[in-house]
Length: 174
Length: 157
Image (cartoon, rainbow over all chains, first blue to last red; front, side, top):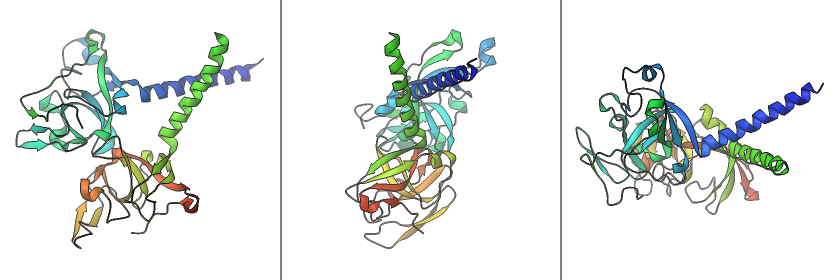
């Protein structure tokens, strides 16, 4: 009857929806699964509840912060790994440019344009303690909300550790 | 209502396609500054940048690349790729004052970039090897000024 025309119209609609979704997820926000326990208990806490052990947490990552690259202490960010650009990590910002961060062995100065990230689960987290300060140009977004599992839906709060970080006067000035 | 939405959706689709092409296929970039003389002018060049090589990892030493500055994330910088991860790079530490050379191995996941004008450039000699994730594209063709129209050839090292 008009099957090719119907097929073409459906294809065009799918294409339009796909293109617009891709653009929105690139520019505004996207939903991302979190793997691993390095941010436990904020993401993927290993409790005995059924939903927790069935699947990974899903979080909302906003991309509007990439307009100005202005972050605050305690923000949870998604960034490309400095050792392998194909991998992405989710960690919390502990130090901003100009800060001095205390690790076990010494005190590190965060250079301009870099940040110090650490996982909430300090015992099992591969973070700036291993690969050093991370350039802010690698940041791909900021995690604002947990969307799955349903009983832990909510905003992701900023958590700062004042005792280990000495910052210059204003937190996000650079 | 129907009439209005019939024209907005193609416009939105067109803009989104433009954005996606810009972000994933290729874009044009205006360069300025003395650090890539004589390849690029001080006053400015309009160059064509493709983003496919950075995504597939098919970059080679000698390519002119653009990347986010490791010191100022909002700034895009244009330099020449000199070493991939694992390569040994020998460079003159301070060309204006001495001839001292240094050899380093580029760490995993990083690349070494240098400006063609070694006397006036801030590059990996100053801020070290940069993570591959900072690379934004490969500049392969100069559009303007007209007398420089042509490909950016890889400089033999």
